[in-house]
Image (cartoon, rainbow, N blue to C red; front, side):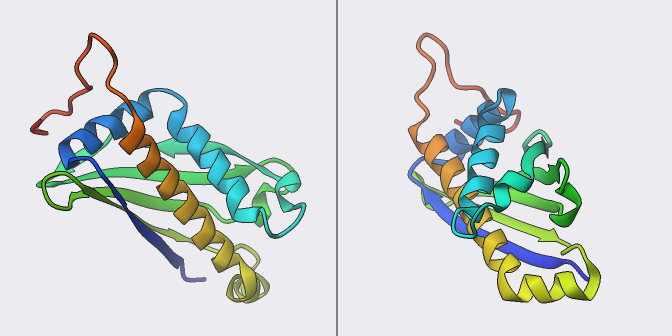
Length: 166
């Protein structure tokens, strides 16, 4: 079965250089994983007791990579647990691109394969794609909010990425 594409875009009211540094900072602790778990719950909130079947416990991400004016972070979400196989794995890139001097567009573009063959594809058309879209939008909004509201650490400059101007 071919992969299903999903994406979202939001704006953060900080420069791209600050956003890139703050995103890198979020990857150092559990903040990005916590945002992923909450987004997973948000995506299923209107479906009923489905989250009880499986918790999003495996979130993997790379180090942010600078590509010209854009910063890219690869992310993989994978459900585990008893019913983990009934949920798709999402592979996505989060991109940060300048939107003027004092704002950044955050985008998430990903692909997942609905499990279950033709039945899974049918369920994806009926409801699962809406859940995936709600989940990535929630996650990206949470990441943008964390980036925009993250205060600099007192007495320490922000984490800097090589090649990212401040």
